[in-house]
Image (cartoon, rainbow, N blue to C red; front, side):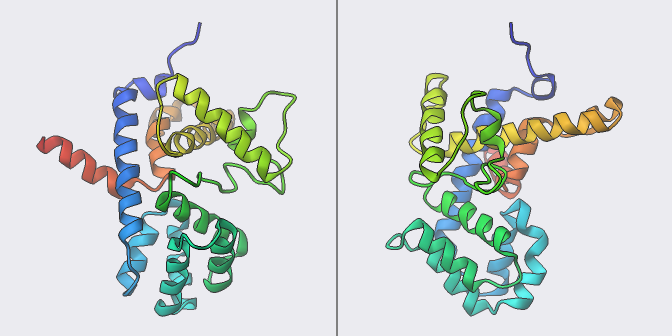
Length: 230
């Protein structure tokens, strides 16, 4: 038998948490789709919605003029371009980030702008150079990803499995949540090996950390406020 994950059931209903995360993801998608970069405040709002990249805001704004960043962001929204073209143009235009971070940032934005078409794909989901990341944690022992085609095939199979368990969505939100959750669980496991377990109660729950890594903190506040007013 499988035991409940006490880190997710101790304080709140995990189903409710999942519902809140999905609502917040929709809000983030709406925000990024409608966002127009005209002022520095617009860029700041974008970075506030990207957990991993918030720390790079100052160096990007210092190295990339607002008009140039605006053009780069518009490229990510341009559905007439291929996925690779959008990522490549963003990476070559935005300064203040190394290539790997620029790629990950572009891919996260594209995922939320077109979640029906593009999955969340960054280094901690699947690093094609090292063949590492959370997707590799959940593969069968005798399976490895050798190409982009393998990556999308694995995601397709994961979506089918999630559909069976009730996470039947018309987009890649489900795989994003599952794979970030797997990443968070892995980090939590390695952290517990390194620190006194008495500290574990001070760490955020896995679903809370999943939402944080997905950059949903500002949108969860809106969702929770709306629920409290309902």
